[in-house]
Length: 402
Image 1 (cartoon, rainbow, N blue to C red):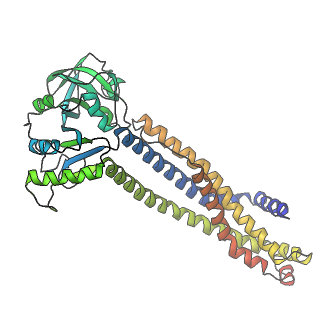
Image 2 (cartoon, one colour; image 1 turned 90 degrees about the vertical axis):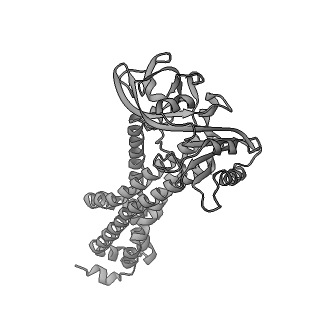
Image 3 (cartoon, rainbow, N blue to C red; image 1 turned 60 degrees about the vertical axis):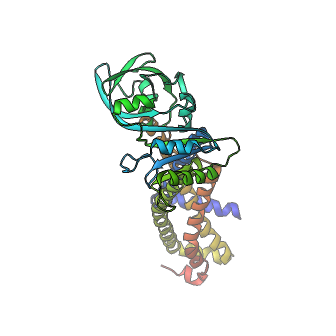
């Protein structure tokens, strides 16, 4: 009997092709949107997690102001006094500071503007210092001597300047000549992959700022030290060096885990909003299925009467229409999953072509299975009331229906 139910459902779809296609559209658009958005969101989360894994869980970051992050608009600054105060904490393995600004860079007569970061390397060499940002020196070496700098991915492939900048060549930063001694690994977004790194002292010189004006401090905890416990000790030390009370902090202390959780929360909220919008399409699709099934019940009233007259039970009629509506949802789900995977891959490839290789797609089995199950359930629920109506028709009334 179950085989007959499915055969009858597919036969109905083939005889009502236009109506079936129009009904499926509402379902597969919603499913495609959900699959592509979740896969992109999950892929981005995995990429960000990978970056934080490269940084290591033993890092603690200190920024001025109350907003956290790399914000040049902050009116407060970190100082050398803050830096030395943090360095005095015994649980710290290494501490470094950084200043960064947008600067004019010139290569072979071509002038552009990009971020330049000056990194202090007092406690550890340049290569280990940049690892705090999830990158490594892929070619050459670190900028450990005056008037040396290290470039990022886009410079090496000719995506920033018209021509690639090889190691050993020279470029000008704010009118001063520097030798390129290394290139960092790819991060995955155009801004980070077009940043220039140099020694702290050189950055102070070209930006014409004092050494007592720091944009960022980051520390590496000793082995076995809980970064969160260390972060609390850093807050206590900075309150003392800056002469402020608890609750009046004009700085932020965050662990790598804090940053990762913040990114995850933001991405999750964005995903929920977008999926909610996609859910409207699924709701419309469900209404279309219900409307289609009600129409099918009306058109096939005599057919229902014939089935009941030759022995079909109410449950048989109910299952016939319920399976039809469930299959409408399921087929729409299959099409939606295929389109969602294709759209997600297309966005990923397009983003990679634009320098955003951090935008990836992930299609776990539970996403695909959940989307198909959900689409079937939507279809089945939408067809429940029409199926109940069909099953309750009396044979005599159904046969006399015009």
